[in-house]
Image (cartoon, rainbow, N blue to C red; front, side, top):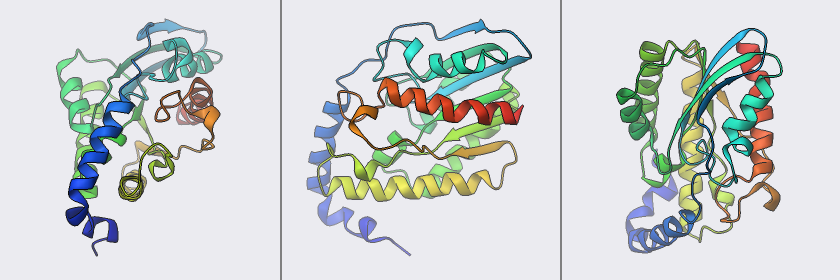
Length: 235
């Protein structure tokens, strides 16, 4: 059954396109933070970690990679493991873009992969069927090329609650993001190596970056603390 927001996209198309262009300009005001994107640290059992994804995975909203998702997650994990890690993420990345990038880089043996994708797939209007197909292809690539034993896919944020996205675009995007997140969670029930992680981060101003779209450093801290125990359990 076609949802109401999907039916209304055609008559609302001119308004949605204009609002979308405005949101995209405002959402690109922050740059990816400086800092290392690979390294080794900690003591204990070996953990090879690959982090992939979009601007959130790349740390937009943080002042440095140390205070972004990768840096804070590695800091958490290095308390119990010897972590060798690599970050492969870029602003505006969709799942197909991430796949093409990963196909070009040298293989990196990964015990665990953390992914953050879906926001740009939502704003590009990918259907939940296309999204599932692309996520399945990504999982196959991570397994075949990088030897991933476990993949933790972060769920989509509640885009329908973003106050800086105007209506009706906020409603349309929110409904689409929820569909993609549900499809991702369902896909995880079919792949034993895939785990869906709901982003259980309070939607409060202190967890949002200054642009109102990306996570703040406080949000990255909570995100890392959600991921770390899941990674340890997977090992």
